[in-house]
Length: 113
Image (cartoon, rainbow, N blue to C red; front, side, top):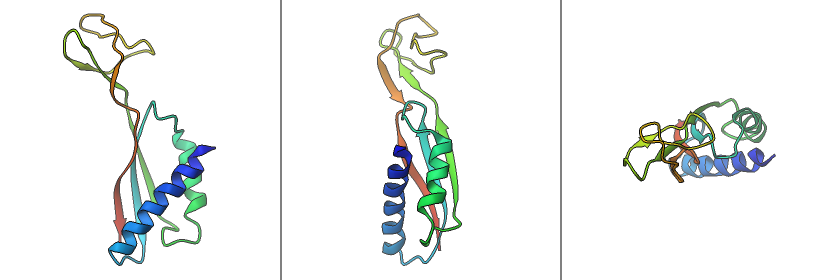
């Protein structure tokens, strides 16, 4: 389960940030996770509960926002969200290989005190 190592890295970033800002608690983590990231949100939430034990983040809340796949059509120059695993433009039918969103996993916000 690679979600454990991802959450360990996320927690390390959060702990560094909290230390730089002289915080004694981390209350909330907000993440954006793309549908193509290879990350399972439920596994990430389980990993989160495991890695925060015994840290200043123990008891913190985790909010995960799923980011849909967004492609760019080279013919019509439009962004679109594909309906299936075939990334065909709904306007012109052109197949797109340009994924512009939906691959990320990013820590977008921390609530500390």
